[in-house]
Amino acid sequence: MDIKELNKVKEKNLKLLANKRIMVCSGTGCTSSKSDVLLANLKKAIKISGVKNLSVEKTGCFGFCAKGPIVVIDPDEIFYEMVKPEDALDIVNSIIEGKIIDRLLAEEKEQLVKKWHELNFYNKQERIALKNCGKINPEKIEEYIALDGYQALYKALNMSRDEVINEINLSGLRGRGGAGFPTGRKWQFTKEAESDIKYVCCNADEGDPGAFMDRSILEGDPHSVIEAMTIAAYAVGAKQGYIYVRAEYPIAVERLTIAINQAKEKGLLGKNIFGKGLDFQLELRLGAGAFVCGEETALMNSIEGKRGEPRPRPPFPAVKGLFEKPTLLNNVETYANIPKIILNGGNWYSKIGTEHSKGTKVFALGGNINNVGLVEVPMGTTLREIVYDIGGGIPGGKRFKAAQTGGPSGGCIPAEHLDTPIDYESLNKIGSMMGSGGLIIMDESKCMVNLAKFFLEFTVDESCGKCPPCRIGTKRMLEILTRITEGKGKEGDIEKLEHLAENIKKASLCGLGQTAPNPVLSTLKYYRDEYEAHIKEKRCPAGECKALTQVHIDPEKCKQCGICAKNCPVGAIDGEVRKGPFKINQEKCIKCGICITKCPFKAISK
Image 1 (cartoon, rainbow, N blue to C red):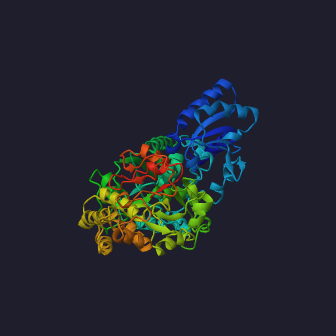
Image 2 (image 1 turned 135 degrees about the vertical axis):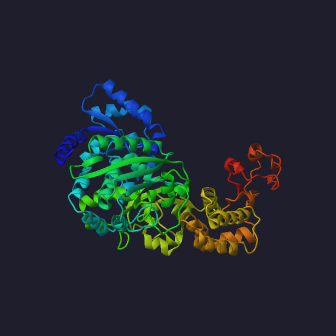
Image 3 (image 1 turned 90 degrees about the vertical axis):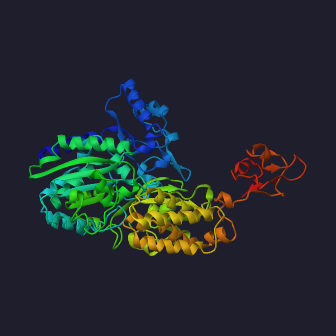
């Protein structure tokens, strides 16, 4: 394919995109809520109705996962939420009649919102990496081309390799995989490495609990990553690329496979791309779900068919990486920004964000938040804006307690830092980190000691075991935390945790071990009183640690109805109806909380 053919495809499909289309979210979240059945029903309804110039298309994630399955009627951008398969016929009929189905619209401030970009969830977002997600069918390369797809590649191939890298440097783009290393510098190092063979790799081994940023980009816009990797291959002098994606992402794997095959058929991968002499092949490699394979050298070992263990650095991958050849490795979100930067220029991108943290960041917003979903905001947006303006606040009117960023490698942000700008420097200052983009919100019911224990359980389980500081040290920390949450904590445990944490950070071989203590250190920094309450008072202030929790019946509120005793699964509640307040036998009580939920008078609490 040459540029003339590319532009013909673009013009033809731009006209098609202007037709009436029913866009159905077919990302993992909505598919799990039967959006695939909804898609099939819509196709049947169109066939039955006989309406012309109306199509149904699958899309990637719209981001507003709390409201899925989502359907958008284009080009009018009518946004329908929580759509069921049985709504299909009503949707088709409404389009034929020129009407809108009010019951499927979102409601905000007692008003129905018709268009998706008018929703508060999207108002403060700026979608660059997610620009095409929800707008195109990711399984049709023509739709990607219609929205300037592969134009950036053609532009790059008409620039020198140094000019391409210079644009990336000008943009200020930093790696979105967690460390935040300047992307342009990494490209430059790989270009300057002397070798007749070089590789370009994509890290799609997204393993942080609660993270689904990369998965959603691959499901909704796979060609953006393919185009970016081809640009990178030209810039650094590589002819072979690999996308390392976890096998637990079947939809992403399927759409990547389709996209790679389509790009090959169009001549956008393979030999002499655009007639400019660039040869580049791209292959998928499936990971088995080991978290440590998100570390770049462990990932490369896995691609080579070896055990996924990290290598000592230096040498760094840019000098000696995959198959001992110079290798460029970026993650999915980093690559997703590249075509836009090349098309619009590095200076355009550098005007978004803060002085040292340019552009936008995609976050998987989860936990105790009303609007669970995928958000993309300019760097420097405050945590308060994300939680309350975009996220819709905390369910049940509860108080915000903390936000966990960076997953098992990150730290907690307490309520006192709600107005902290989300950028690399600001998060580092308060003892947290950007990470790959997991953002877990916690309310007042969450125990921070138990949270630290949860992340240590994860890292202990995922440690490859190669180096003793990580293999043994994290295990010892977990033992201490487990003891504390079980009411067996002792004086000096906090100091032991701090001592172990500092040594593990200094002595571990790779990023997994070096950052594993971060959740413990950050919770100790901001919630030390909770640790002390567990150890000294044998009390969990949040009431989450069962071994330290006692359930009580308020004798003044108890109406002596006996409902609690009838529902107790272990017979731990004593008393007789109308003969005095009921009491809980603490030795028998298993702290299940059933009595709390069943009491109609709210007389029972932890």
